View: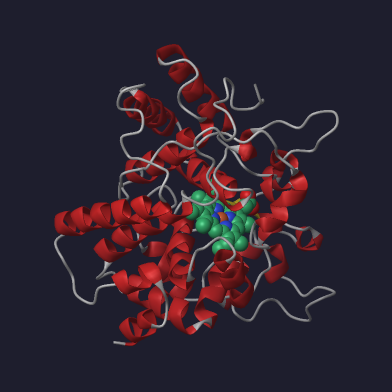
Length: 354
Ligand code: HEM
């Protein structure tokens, strides 16, 4: 099978793509075991880290996250994205949560982070945890747990989260160049992921996070209209789908950069139309039909491995595999550049250093 052959050319987690269907329960167990292997390879983090110091930590996070998502189902997307934007910039150290100061513009106020949401929910969880176990649970761990819970509450997989991250003391808007650029082609995406220790399979799998949430018009408008840099709308976009998108998104937005502070106020479209609050494989079906909303989604069809993965997941016969793969890749992402031991600090409030 093409996808299995392509999988062999990649490293680490790539070899975990199985070629036959397995009962979901067994797949979930395998995913958990694999995630644990990856976590122990990462070394310093531990699934039972708060067992003695704050045994209720995971339950508190879960309860608050569940309440927030019940009231506002689109928050699952926001919480998942927060963790990704945290880990890709300066490691998973909650630097994305810090406020700017009079002398420093923080990540939060950088262009690619203009439409991040969910900061208030994270702050509520932190307040609860500070009451239960003061000065114990880091904001970086909270982000990792909330991302996991958000996915499972959206009917996706769950996995054990290794804990023990500490919070960074710095945050700089300038570092946000570490996030893959909005207009990157697949080769640049592969490079950006490799720079974080993630392989091409992780790219194909984690892009599946776009099964949740929305993108605002400035993030994709340049694909809909001819512009100075581009004589025609993006030929990689299905023409009828592009027609529909143009109804919500005028050509003025095509001159934007897709990430400035006005992005969040622009009209938005579902990244996975019809199922953007449910974690499933329908995102891949849209991408396979050239209806991936963002350039990064569409570009998955331009690389042998990512294309094979998209078509595999789009078939609808391997949902269990995708869930398993997602758990494994999330565990890898959650270990990027973590601070442990006596590095960093445990913030009292997630938006300011102690
Ligand atoms: C492969 C490179 C990626 C690029 C270029 C990218 C880019 C984007 C952009 C431009 C948006 C829409 C922003 C807006 O218009 O408001 C978005 C939304 C989103 N991204 Fe990504 N992304 C990438 C990977 C990821 C990964 C790895 C994750 C999580 C593991 C993720 C999770 C999300 C989610 C959940 C949303 C929806 C957010 C919401 O509804 O508030 N993305 N992404």
